[in-house]
Each structure stands twice: as structure tokens, then as C-alpha cells.
Image (tube, rainbow, N blue to C red):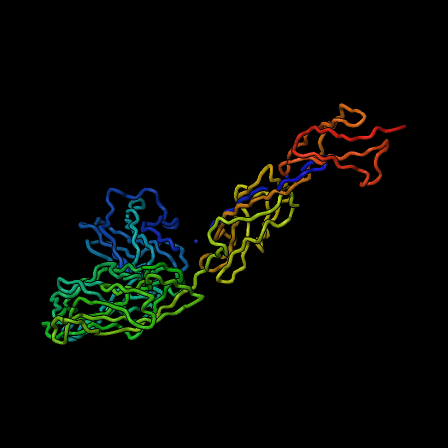
Length: 571
């Protein structure tokens, strides 16, 4: 807008903002440091260590001496922990005439006294040999850790043979109570085939039972075998300590070697069988916000005694929200599905399975469903990060120049939190020092030392940050982290300021009827100057009222004019 000052003269800005949006560590397997309590001599006889090997089960240590053994009497010593974890040295065996072979330690007590403490599962032990004919002749310490799990097989009957339809049960015994989620399993060898004993029962507890049903075609005349440390968390399943649900239980165990007491003869496979799920229902969990394709719990699998290829499918109330891998039975989040605990925390689907064979074992042209299992999918709550109501930004705010400190800069910049958490706002960015923000409301205000001047700086850039003060699990954070940010552009608008007065007003060329007036233009700091208002008065004293001023017609921005038709003053 243009203005015309009365011999006095007068004259938009822009600003900017921006926005910014937490396991378990598994220790590597390595030999621990020898406890200080085990160290009593500094020079072991490294030329002849006498020990050939050490081994363990869950409740025993076995020391095998070299052949031939050292002549003369020896002591077998152990350095072992108490139940509170304090280590000490104990003489276990005193052998006056040692012979080659193995010596099994069951009790940590002098002379292997049965009244002493027993060897415990999943603990660190050290053993060595000391000659008792002179003090400085001893072997180095040998480290061994007892197994965490003991495996036992159920009886194969009077003929020591599992037959078709018999259950092969493997019991895994732990040192403390464990809790199972999903379907862990134990692979084992039947003849030249690898089968799997699937988890059946025992959780929570110290004894977990795994089971496999013998079918026609299974044959092992030497006895089944289980490799060391074969127990596995299959398909995302877990075996955790009951006392600390996020801590995984140690699964190491000794091998189960072939034994004539556990042979297998399933006979010829003659009758076709159908696949079966282990139960009628199952509940799976999935975190809200899990992306499309993310796994929903562990795979839902069936067992087919004929070992046919199985095909899985989905049906049921919420089938459109999920997919399933037809080969593995793994349910995944479907395309277009947004899992939101606050809106819907439970879904129901049915998993179907078929072996695509008829009752006689012939291929079906149109496969029929052989078994189903009802699946409840429970959506677990995850702390939702706050979201700005105006999107991802950048956004804009406007304020006038010359605004006083603490004046608000446009509308508040706000976010919403689906969990209903209290939100806290803060500022960062290039020009954050020029502004403040109300941490509770999100209102940006002019800083205490800020002078907004359109002509000097018409725009600013800042970032509004927000936090709900909680971690991903919804727990309070001791030092809250920023969850989301948004860029804000602050524009300063121009305010038309009154023009200054022209300077150096000079009167020249005076006559009895006219005079010439010239002046210097004022500084043009406001709107563009487009003219002057020129007024004069006639008389020998200054006018006392506004009405005594006479307007002189003057157009344009010229800085000189002639006032005519004047009357000469008479004394």
C-alpha cells in the first residue's frame, strides 16, 4: 500500500521451523578366568600334564588320565563353586597307584564322600592332578562346564524296540524351572533319517517332554542317537528362565549314543494317515505396528505320519488381515493391515492343512482339508510415538514485525499421542535462540532478546520437537528422548511505519506574490514514498489551530514547489 506523508514520511517479513521424530545381549562362548581361589602355585609341570581329557554331564565330571599314567601317588583336585558362587579347592581322589582310565566325580568332597555337595548343572569347574610325593609337581588346571540339560529316553518296552504307533519320549531336565513359548524340538537319528521330537508338555517346570510317534518305515537296529546340543528353539520358539522371563535358558547337553535298549522297528508303511495339529487351539502374539509381511508368533505346524508334503491355508473371521506361508505354516501380517492395539487387540483365524492325498494315499485332484486349528492372534501394546497434527512438515507460521517478547507466533504447533501420554515440546534448529516454546501447549513465542524487523530479517527457521517421555515398552524414561520433530518456517510480515519528516526545508525566490520551497527526502524505510503533503500559513506568528494551515497542491515525489498567489504582509 502506498502512502502520502504530510511533509513527513512512512513502509512485510518471513520466518521458518523443523521436526525430528530403544535386548538382550548373548555372551560369546569362551573359557572364563581361573578364580583367584584356585591359584596357589605359579609353576605347573607343563612337560607332563598327566590328564588326557575331561568331560561332563549335568551332574558329573570325568577325568581321563594319560596312558601310561605317571608313576607314584597322585591327587585329583577340583576347584568348584558353592551355591553362592564362592570357589574353593577340594581333594577328590587320592590314588596311591594310579592306572590309566577315567575317574568320575559326582561329589565335591574330600575322598569323594557322598555326603558332600553334588556336582551341579551349568556350572564352571576346574580340575588338576598333583603328585603327593613332592609339592611342586602338578598339572595345569583343566576347565570344564557341566551341561545345562540332561536328556533321557522313555522305555522301549520289554523287547527294547519302539514299534509303529509307539511314542518316543525325550525328557529334558533343567537345573531350574523354564517356560516354553512356541514349539521347540529335538532332532534325532533313526537309521539314516533325521526325525524330530516336538515339545509336548512340562512348561513351566524343570522337566520338558518332547515326543515323536513311530510310523511305518522307521527302522534303527542299533538304537536312536541324539547329537550333543541338538535341542533347538525351532521357528522362533523360546525356552526362558521362569524366574526371569527375558533370559534364555542354556540348552547345552551331552549326546545320547546308540543303545540296544532303544531300537526302532516301525514295520512297513501300509496305511495312509492324515496330518494332525497337536491341539485344537493356539494363541499367538504379535506387536502392534508390525509391518506387512512380519511374522505372527511361531509357525503353526501339523504332523503327518506318512511324511507327506503338507500345504497350509487360512480361513476364519479375520482371514483378510493375514497371510500364511503354504509350506511352513508361518502366519504373517497381510498387505494393508495396520495392527493397532488401541483399536483392535485380538483377531481370530483358522489354519487348515492338507496332505493332498485320499484315504488310500492317492493324490487328490482337488485337495481336501484334513485338519484345522483355531488361532487367536493377540496384539500386544507398543508405546505409540506422538504425531504432529499438521503432518510431517515443513509447516509455516506468521507474525508481525515489532512484536513484543513473549508474544505468540501464530497457532500452537501440536501433536497427538494415541496412548494419551502427556507431551512435552521443545525447540531446536537454526533460529531456535530467537524464540521460546511453551513446553505444554506447543505455542511458539518471541524470545526475550529478539527484535523482529521485517527489513532486517524477514524469515526464520526452527524445529519443534516432541516427546511422550516413554520408551518403546511404555516405561518412563529417566532422560526423555525426542520422538518426533517438524520443520517450521516463520514469516515476519511488514508493518507500515510512519515516514520521517523531510529535512533541510529551504525557502528561496520569494516575491510579493510567491516563493519557492525545496527539501531533502526522508529515509525510505517503510512503504514506498509516492508524494508529499505541503501546507503553509500566512502571518507573523505560528498558527494556534489546525484550521489556520493552508494546503498547497503538490503531486509526485518532487522535492521543490512554488507557492503562488500570496499576499504581501502589511505592517
